[in-house]
Amino acid sequence: MKKIFGLLFLFLSVFTLVACGVKEESLDGEYHLYWVASNTGEKHLDGESIHSMKVEGSIMTGAAHKSYELRVDKDRGVIIGEYGREWPYTYKEGALVFDGDEYYKVGSKAYQDKKKEIEDTK
Image (cartoon, rainbow, N blue to C red; front, side, top):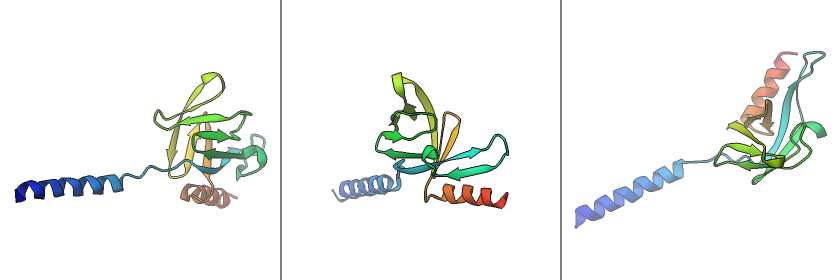
């Protein structure tokens, strides 16, 4: 009987530790578009009105060149636009990339690193 309780306790302990260790990064927050000026080659990472984007839950607003709301399907790893058009996205530590554009979450390490990279090239 002690062995059964011991194994049950061990199983529950391992399950709890694994569950606590799995941490899904939230996409929620404000993002700034990283872009390079075509005429000067100057790099930018700013939050001007046309370059600022927000994600709240599964709704994305303000993405570059898109005047409508987008939906984020985290399970499938796609962003869904008007008429069901889909763009696969990647997200890692505050850097969100989709449809050829790079966005950086304000306040994230990725944002700080990109900002420093831009400043170092000036």
